[in-house]
Image (cartoon, rainbow, N blue to C red):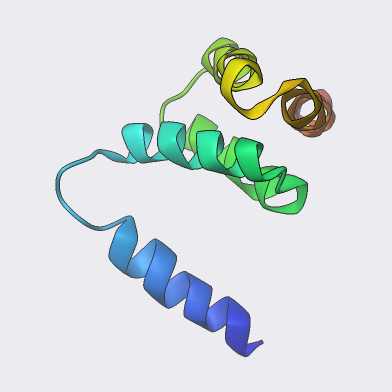
Length: 91
């Protein structure tokens, strides 16, 4: 739909293509924001993207743990469940 086109064009097209941060760093920032927002649906897409951008599963786990101190334990627990579901399917 139109909202998807806007997202792809503006977020993935413009923001992710900017200079200043690499894709790996952008994934770290994005995961932190999405975890804090408890945006589980978006995290389902961004955990695999983060892996493709060079993060390891252990680093993603550490992002989740780190967010627990700033975004709260419920947000981190939700993110952990999403990550576990994705990683279990990959094995």
